[in-house]
Length: 141
Image 1 (cartoon, one colour):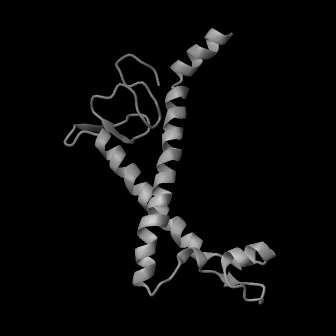
Image 2 (cartoon, helix red, strand yellow):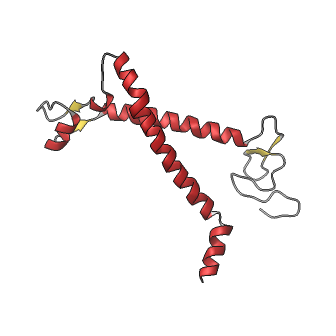
């Protein structure tokens, strides 16, 4: 049973998926630090010393001094500064993923449409990366 599980792991690329997930989590941590510690402080300084992590709307009417004070008191707040940081982090992560994905497709490589799903794939592909259909002659979808 253990050898069958090992074969499944290797055949189904579960190990590659797990490694990609681990690298993705590590990349997210680096990008979070980049946004929080490198990008946002100068942006906040340029905008008059604004700390984006401390921008919030108090829904309780008690006017706490900071997001942390409001959270410690259990007050309801809309933390739009944290949301702005999260959006900026997402944009940077998406751009990095785009650059990585783009590097895997050779420039000027001949492309074709998959006959099963219609997505554009490399002309030399033997299997569609979108619908996973076999594209070699004589194979079934």
